[in-house]
Image (cartoon, rainbow, N blue to C red):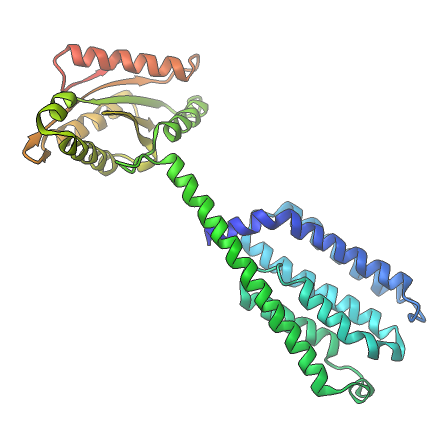
Length: 336
C-alpha cells in the first residue's frame, strides 16, 4: 500500500491537470457541437458543477489513497453520463460518435487508477453509461460485432498501457524508498545513521516544550583495545551486539549510530530518574553479553534538553557528561 500511495503522490498534479482537461473538453465540445439541436442547460450545468467539485475535492485530499479511488470512479461516472447527455442531444448523429467517445474515455483514463481491476471496472462503467439503454436504432445502424471488437481492443490496449506504466512507477517508487532507507541506515548495525539521527534530534528539540526530552551519548569502553587484540571482525560483532541490545531495550526510531563505537539515544516523556533507569537497565544487559569470548560494556552521558539550547549545545553537554563517565572509571552513566 505504501508504494501505491507514493505513486498517487507522484502523479497527483498530472491527474489534476488531466481532470481539468477533461472538464474543458466536455464543456467546449457540448457548447460547440454543431449536432446539438437543444442544449439541456440544467443537466449540463449540474454535471459541469459536479465535475468541478470532484476536481476541487481531489486537490484537498491528495494524500488519501482510498479517496483517490472513490473520486476516480465518481469523476469517470459523471464524465460518462455527461457525454451520454451530449450524445443524446445529437439525435441520429450520435450513431457515428458514440464509439469514438467511449474509446476516448477508456483510453484517457488508463492512468487514473493504481489497480487494474479498478481500471477494468471503470471501463465497464463507461461502456454501460454510453451504450446501455441505447435506442434500438443505434444497434441497427452499427455492426454489433465490430462494436464489440472496437471496445474490447480499446480496453485491452488500455489495460496494457496501465500495466506497463504502473509497473514502471512501482519500480521507481520502490527504488526511491530503498534509496531513502539506505541513506538513513547504518550498514553494519542497521540503526539510524548519524544523518538520520540528527533529524530525530531536531524533531525532539521541536517537542521539548511539550514533553520532557533526554539525550544520551553512549560509547563502548575499550573498543580500540578489542579491535587491536581480537581483530576488526570481532569489533564489528561487538558493534552489532550493541545495536541489538539498543533495539531490544529502546524504541528503534530513538537510537542511532553516531560514528565508530559511539551511539545516541533520544528518550521522550520520561522523568530524569526513569530516563536514567532505562539506560542503567541497558548497561546491565550489555554487561551480560559475550561476543566471541569477549565481554564489553559502555559509558554514557545523559542530559535533559532545555528550551534555550540548540543541537550543538546538547551534543556538547552530552559529550562532556560522557567524558566524566570515562574519567570516573568507565562502565557507568553520568547525568549532565
